[in-house]
Structure formats: C-alpha cells, structure tokens
Amino acid sequence: MRISRRGFLSAGLAVTSCFLLAPQKAVAASLFRSPVATNMLRPPGAVKEDIFVGKCIRCGRCVEVCPYRSIQPLSLKYGVYAGTPMVFPAEIPCYLCMKCVEVCPTGTLLPIAKEATRMGLAVIDRMRCVTWKGESLCHTCYNVCPYKEQAVRLDEFRPVIDEKACTGCGICVHGCPVSTEEGKKAVNIEPIYSGVRS
Amino acid sequence: MNEHRPSLSRIRLLIQGMAFSLILINPFLNYYLHINFVQGWYQSLGIGKLWFVSPLEGLESILVSKVIYLPLVIGMLSPVILAFLLGRVFCSWVCPINFLSSILDRLAAVLARTGRKDRWLLSRHVLWFALLLEVILAMVMGAPLFVFLSPPGLVGRELMLLVFFHTVAVEGIIILIVLTLNLITRRFYCRYLCPLGGLLALLGAKRRLQVQQDETACTKCRQCDRACPLGLEPSKGEGASIYCWNCGDCVDACKFNALNFKWQ
Image 1 (cartoon, rainbow over the protein chains, first blue to last red):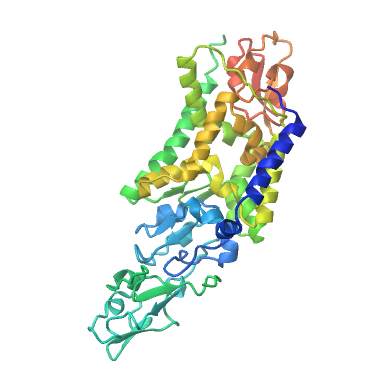
Image 2: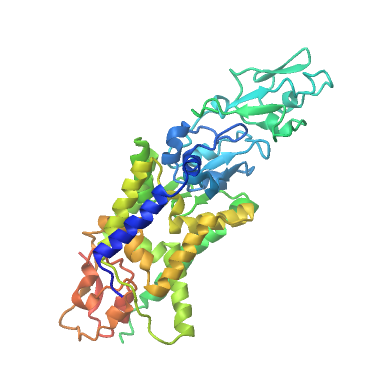
C-alpha cells in the first residue's frame, strides 16, 4: 500500500488537530499547569518553574543518583510535566546530600551550597500544631531539623521557623506526628521560591 | 562467501546487547548496591565525569528555555561528532528500540520462514517533517515532547521505574506501538517518524563512513536490497544516501564483496 503525500499530511493534520482542539479546557489547563504545590517540591538548586518544564530533559539521573529515593519522576497524569523530578517530603524528605545537583546535565538543577538550598519554606500551622495548641510539648521538628537553632528555634517551647535559614528540605514535615484530613502535617513546606502561585 | 570477513550483524547485535544491558543492569546497581558511578540512559548518560546528552533533547532544552548551559553543550558534543563522522550509527548500533526490533526480527525469522515484506511505504521526506514538527511543536507549546515520549528514552525510564518503584509508566505503550509497527513495515518508526533519527541523519549527511558499492563486482542480485532494514536499495548506491544508518546488513548480505564500508 502506498499512500500519497497529500493523504499522509492531511491525516497527520487531522490527528494533530484532534489532540490540540478536542480536550476540554479544564483538562488542557491541568496538562500545562505546574504540579509544584505544598509538600510537592523540586529537588535542590532547581530553576524557576516556568522554564523547568522546557529545560529538564527527563533523563532521570537525579532520580537514580538520590541515595534516599527522595526524588520521584512524575507520571503522565501531570501532562507535559511527566518525567520531571519531584520530592514529596511527607513520604521521604530531602536530606540535602546534594548529589542530584552534581549530575544534572541541563542546568535545571544548578550546583548550590547545602545551606543556600531553597526548596521552599516550612510553615507551621499553629491551629494544628499540638505544642502551639498547648496540648503537649512536642518539638520533633526542632529535633530533626538539620539547621537546628538557625532554621527552627524554640520560643517558650514552641517551634518557630526562621525563613532566613530554612532550606525547605522537609525533614520536619516527615517527622511531624500530626496529620490532618487534607493529608497535610502541622508543619508544611510551601514552595514560595519556585515562581508558582499557590 | 568471503570467509575472512567477520559477520557485522553478529558484532552489531553484541554491541546492541551490551548497550542494552548497561541500561538494564545500571538501575539495579544504583538501587540495591548504591553504586552510582553511572547514571541515566540514552537521553543523558553519565559515566563518572564523562557526560553524554542526546542531541535532540539538548537542542530542545536550549530552544525552549533559551539558556545555553555549557556542560549541556559539552555533553552533546561527542554524540554530534559521532553522527557527523559515522552517521546514524547510534540508531543502528546502540538504540535500545532497534535492539528490541532486531531481537524480534530474529525470533520472527526462526518462527516464520517467509521473507519480511514492507507493506506500507511513505515518502522518506516524512522523516524531516517529523523532526521539524517536533521542534516547532516544542517551541510553540513551550514544553518539549520528545524528552518524555521518545521511545529510546522510554525504554530506559521504564527499566528504571521497574527497579526503583516496581511500576511502569503508561507512556510505555509507545514502545509497544513502535515495535508493533515493525509488523507493517520494518523499522517503520525509525524510517519515518523518529525526530532524533532525523536529526542524526541530518548531522551525518556528509559522513566519512559510508557503504560504497563496487560496480564491477556487483551482479545485481539485489540480496542487499532485501537485507536492508530501512528498505533502501544499496544495489543502486543508496548506501551512501542520507537515509542510510550504517548498520552493515547489506555488507553482510553481499556474497560478491561488492559492498564495503569505506572511510573517505
């Protein structure tokens, strides 16, 4: 069977326009919307989210090199963001070993010092935190923080975050014993440096 | 038959097998033994400090983000030079998709003794349209498509996902589609649709290593034409064409030593 060029091109055009025109607006929007959100963070040294999707070639080297398996590649349900690396600190936080930034071939993750990492900012939910509510004297977030006394201090036994030192690694999120109905913790990482409005 | 010449297809299958076992074994080394000297697959491969980046993926990254990152350019350099000198040899000697296709070809040859026929032929220019469409689409969407939908890359990603997360991604169906298309036309995807193949062919347009035909020795038996997995006709000198990927199957098939690789 030999197909004419015109036949092939019009078939190709038809298929392409199906992909471009057919999806509902909501679906199309979610396919292009960045999945970065609370407790969904890019690995250390990541570029701003608007160029991340174009710069990352989904080679998976950061995923393979991460010794804690903190970095996971996203699935196809995240649209064009499929295959990009993501850290879910509530599951496994980033322990700031800085191996991923050394292997990224595209500069999507740029080499950065451990203490200069800004994956996000830890925010304590004072309505949920058992210490802030006065129910107990839990200070797990303070205990586990790699920058204890800099990123998190105790103020009258209650944890307080200092945004000048918090790397957003999420070890406090992982340690926090409080889980809310929305699947959040009493301390959560907000990706305020990623350029995504949440 | 010329006894002194080693069988190229056997050497090629060995190299393809080694390239495939690298991306097959490496996730296990990374996951279970924490040996992360080698990372990645054939989108970007890092062997210690030696980095390789697939030229099309690198090009898309640069075009879409409009930032030139020097390690990326250096990583792209050696594949580009390889394609410039030897042509599309990545496709024929390394690419895991072509390895799987070759294995299936050999299986089919054992199971069914009838010769393979190419049922659906398109104009070979479709390859250039595929490359152009892919680059334009990536720039229009502001998000590259080939980087997460490329069949050679997907083989590596699926193997990694299987070892690391004990799951596979749905995109993997593309691999099955590409392999199934082989039933209609041998290497249908490689011939007409692979943007990476298109880019490598373009880079290798004036390649140094070519299959040259010795007109005096040729008996026009056309065994080479039947052997070519891309459906080219080396008997008409198409071994030197831009579409040839230097796999050497025609050189193997020629009983009269009329086809040979020549460095020029």
